[in-house]
Length: 335
Image (cartoon, rainbow, N blue to C red; front, side, top):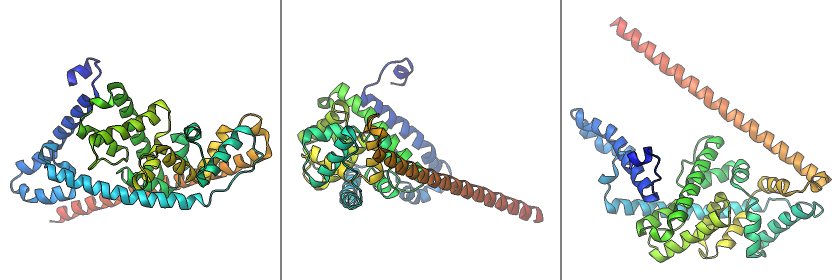
């Protein structure tokens, strides 16, 4: 497979996953072999596995351990889904409604968001307006609480600076979108049950204890929305938190609930992008633009403060390490 890839051939989705898994296992052997070469180091192997459970190659994993981990992940996701849904709905109460005089496109969008909060939208309108909340717009204007919750829901590290959380989510979204295209090209029917289960769980959907036909159906729904109807991946992920705790078949309603739960800054950005040149000349859009610029300035200041704090911590750590090294050298010289 490596020689084919070097030669310019395109690997199938299954071959690509197998190559990644094999390469990862080979890389894991390097630290694992340390415990076998150094005498008596194998006594510390259980401690190392406890601290770093992913260091073992995949061939050492037992089926019951994999299933137990999947059950823990499912329980965590259901809990996070309920928390995320409640948090988003609570934040939606604070979203301000814009004036009705904003013009055609902007008025349509704000009217749709208002209807979505009351649960009175049509399915055809949901996908139409969902495209306006593209991934970059949504992630760039998300608050920290939403970023942390979404990272936890997608099994990503939920700590670090906001910029790091956004980077993780963007990378995850990019990987999912690439995988979606591969599955569409090869067909859902080409996937085995375990592959369907893995693909669904990677996208925040139920995978454990679900029949193969249901796995294929919900993955096909996702692919239709993602690749054919071009619904942003970030909205689809948010909608999964509603689908996990409510009716999983009502996909459009879950997307509408996600849109209605977006905070004010994200809606404002979408309204500005939807506004026509005539609308941009109105006082309402100008005021909205000023509010958005102020919010973006606050985000820039926060990111700068986080970067300076991280730099300061790195310098302090480097200085402490250098001081410890010098102290050890002095002690050795004294002896």
